[in-house]
Amino acid sequence: MSNLQKEKIKDDEIILGKDRSNFQRYLAFFAIIVVYFFYCYNFMVGTFVKPVMTYSLSDGGFAFTLKQTEEIFAVMSLATIPGTILFGIISSKIGKKFTLIIVALTIGITTFLPLTIPTSYLLWKVSRFTTGIALGGVFGTAVPLVTEMFPQRYRGKLAAILTSQFSIAMIFGGQLYGALGDANWKLLMYTAVIPPIVGAILVYLFVPSDREHTKKLIKGAKNKGEKINYLNMYKGKYLWIGIGAILLSGANFTAYSSFSNNATTYLKTTLGLSASVAGAVFSLQGIGQLVGYNLWGFVADKFGRKVPAVGMLLSAAGVFIYMKLGANDITTFKMVSLFLGFSMGFSGAWGAYYTELFPEKFSSLSSGISFNGGRIISTFTLPAIAGIAATSAGMTGIFKISMFVFIAGTVVWILLPETLNKPRKD
Image (cartoon, rainbow, N blue to C red; front, top):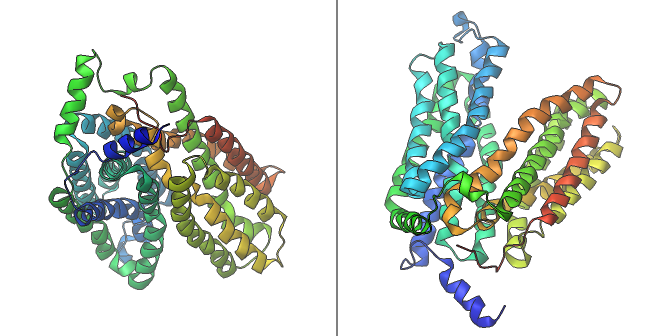
């Protein structure tokens, strides 16, 4: 590619708010971060209210069974998948900015609904399902907005900052719950209700509108006899790119969850470590992941979107080492946990990468379905993998599968195209 072509790409990289100053652009990014952070934070609601849900009415609880509480939050997770598709379609019609505002307001309102009759199991289930639908719309609208406001050389880092909000939300939510406790569960709930609404207002005030750009894309597609929808997005080579992206996300969700969801159980039941030691080891993974998201995002901007695949392969190596340690290797466990968290931050730039894999007209659709589509895979694979713990393979059997899925995901990633400094086709 000639220098002239490269300069042309740089000139065309900023799509929204070209006339805005860097300060205005980063102010818009902050507004999106507020919504994204409290999207991540909303997944902590179960931590805030699950104990109270199982208390008796006389003890100030809701008298729900443990199974009922699991069902309430399971439907929320499931609803993120149709939510991704629904809000992807909406954003392709009215623009990503106003879709994100609708999503943020919906998150706040639906999170508040069960507070009106907190002892109603049905209301909790319906409310968390509708919240899940709204949560499914955040990634696919927030990330493309950021992608269209900044040059490509910043997108990986900025997408990684968004992705890392989940780790920060976990730390913040855990600390807040520890400080306020079950007695203040309503106050904790309000911390998940009010901020998304504030975020919606900030997005309205500071994020440049993409409505005219959306109309332009619709008109351009119409002139070619096309429509901007999922069916047209997955045509020709983009069908295989789309399948590859979903498989990559599915590998990440499956490998990450099958390891992380069982790490503390393995340390306690298999190796006989105390809960405090197991918790200390696991918490270092979260710290490592927070650093990893941002560092791999920098790598993706500097060296290429596929280079962080090294982190996915290192995750497999980390799981292998983890299985080889014994009950006396506490210090080594902590070091490996930190290393694993860092390596697992490989997905930090995926928001930018998934958006760039497809033509610009599909920006409203591509990143959300590519990322959350992987949840469909993990929804079926994780319960099947969990059953291995009851066999002779035990927990190490689950970890071995996690390791091999990380390796398989690395192979899929290598086969996908590179997008850094590559022009996006119309």
